[in-house]
Figure (cartoon, rainbow, N blue to C red):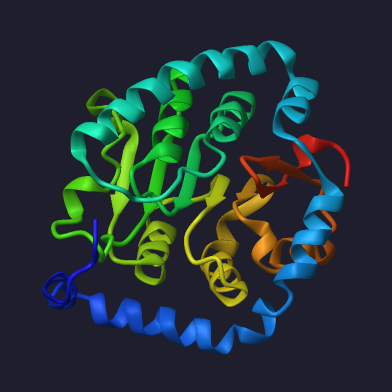
Length: 259
């Protein structure tokens, strides 16, 4: 679906749109020195990575089998839903990993940034429902390239799972501040929005006071810069890198038991 000037102008009238897009553009401009490290960051990630399947099956083979069953069923439903909606909103990150981790850790509060069609949101919510516990707080901003973006955000999330879901649509800066006032702690963070070094760092600072020693974090596309590597060095926490569909995802958490 091609972006038109009319679509851009219409979306520009949405409350907060110009502020969100302006901050994003400014961060990208000031982030150039970090972006130059992308080739080296990719080489680093590749040197640390292991295939997602072997990593998860080693953690819990039985749960990995369950995850694969969920993934097969969900992937078929998601592709059908997207074809019916006739929209393109990008990929869904390492959503099988998210299902596995939520089932494994049984978190009470999960926070994610970046929803789009809702691959990761549906996987997290499906696992929370299986656990019979927990809620998901998701931060996003209407996809400006679409004519009418709001109805498409999280379109893959089944209606029966939405009782556990809190969706915020004002952009990460405002959303994460609201989430920080709505919860007392965070057990799992999934970051998949502004991939710039500064964007990641700013987002994590907004929720830092809610992170406790048992909090786990998953970062998508860590090959874009050295944010993930630097974060693991700063906090000296157990971490791992997995390759999924040609990209790299970073995981931090005491449940890994190694660094």
